Image (cartoon, rainbow, N blue to C red; front, side):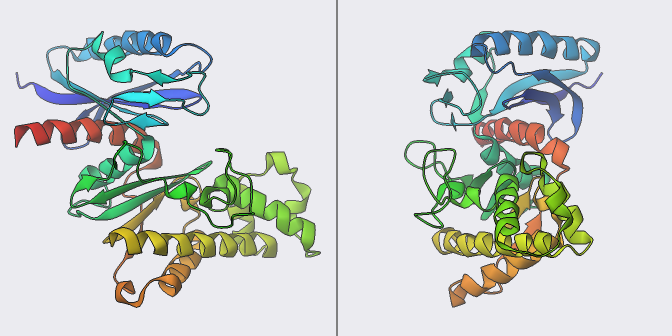
Length: 324
């Protein structure tokens, strides 16, 4: 019987932790999810994770060989294998995630933030296949980013490079969850566009179906639906969001000269509503030598697969580097 090598990809979120077994070609053999229970210690999560992973592997015994574990998580440090003061989790200080995993699996372990993992997922399985220089932007509740230059993820001196979402749009602007002001993610994200709609509704007298929705219930999907039906406030919100996003992405192009910028996440699912104004703004603010050279692309992965495939790509990438 042929035995297929697989890796375990784990995505740790504030609410749920998703994980799956993925082969070298990016096929997910099996996948599960458990509650993160963010108020509990990290040790509890990993113990429960191990129990469920073994439950998942049992019917596959003899057919697949586990070769490594890749983990995507907020505030993860690739160099140290740690997760450090993550938002939406009660883990204070530094959690040695790689050491916790190795209590159960004597295998290669790699840890990075979820956006970096997504970038590797795009490089191995998605829209960036064949590329060596690109940026992935995750447009979720906030804005995450992963930068690949020369075929390698950019981690910087301390392992935390690539925080495009925390570059400044307006020093006196919106308060960010990190404590700063006017950061890109407060404007260009699912949460950011909801704030934009609330601000527009307060200063415009224009009729809008969004006026009937309480601010706390508003979602980017609702705004996209309204824009698709011709709602003026919703359309203006997308134009404003795309203009700011394109402007800041032009700064990133000047830094790393990517072949492409890939957008994914809830806000990116709005398609042309966000891509068109972002592309126009990007071209407007680009240094002339870069104009017309940078593709703006949607993810090549299904949104539900990105987290696990990205985490698995992280460890596959490490295994491949070791083999060279």
